[in-house]
Image (cartoon, rainbow, N blue to C red; front, side, top):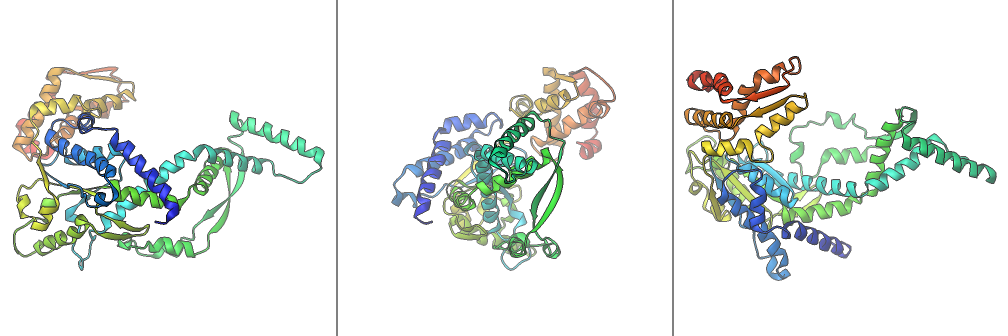
Length: 460
């Protein structure tokens, strides 16, 4: 980065400090509690990791580079909140975040996704985040410029005598008033739009294109001349198109890319799911060679390396990596020692109990009961659940998880879907007005499904 970028570095640093520094670890856990029930050990670990980012930014420059993030491995069955904790943490810090599955990667030399693609994808996400923020900042200015262009289309500026210029100005202001009042929104205008030449790029195979460091498709589109096309659209459509064009013109993409890279390097979070799927002891034939190969390829990214992206070089030294896995068939010690060393923090997440299910149904801000209540409210239907009904739903979810595969809180989705299926199908053809879900209704709908092992296996 050159000297002109130093104010950008300072502004980005201040923004990062404001986002993270305003939250203490205890407050971070409190905010996570609004969406995730239990799992206090995991919440505590990620809260400390996030606060350490703020602490690192406050340290002197020489030592700051030496302070590496304490990457975390979350161990626990599916559906207990591993992904949700990482996702909500990133949202709290407004940090670039990506979730990847370790099992999707192959080692270098094999066909498939290489591990560096996670950094490239994270950088693209960060660029889009910064670009969206800049677009919001220039939105009003872009709207005004688009309005002026629209008035030019409605009343072309023609060179006239001085006397006529005043009349032209008055007419323009009258048109502006009509525009604001919405009187002209259905009127048709002709606008010129630029379109990329896609006839050639359309035949380029899609497979593997996202793995190329330099975006070949974009490069081809930039070389080919852009076509100008005249379109006849309504005033409303023209306003949107022109606003988008003006927004793009007002955004300095070089600044956006530089800030996005800074954010990735200093606050990016990569969540590697299913890391247990690439753990294994020795050579057993089949995919095990690839598993250990993927681990070896992951190691330099996690340790800290420089990855080439279409937005430039990105350093991974200070990206926070959170890995997760059920570890049913393997254990963390089956990972290669070097990978184990790069994940010093290990937290075990508990399986969910019947009591946890009760709380999950009602307490989080995005609780399932709140979701279904809001969905049916759009059809002017009022649905309520008695305390006993909620207890029974939680009981059946726990029973099915014990009998069949334990899929954690996801089981509540299948239970609730089976319980409310008839109501969701009949509405709006049938008007219920008020729907009161009681313990008896829950038993009537679910008891046979839960008790019949075959039905339970295939339906729940």
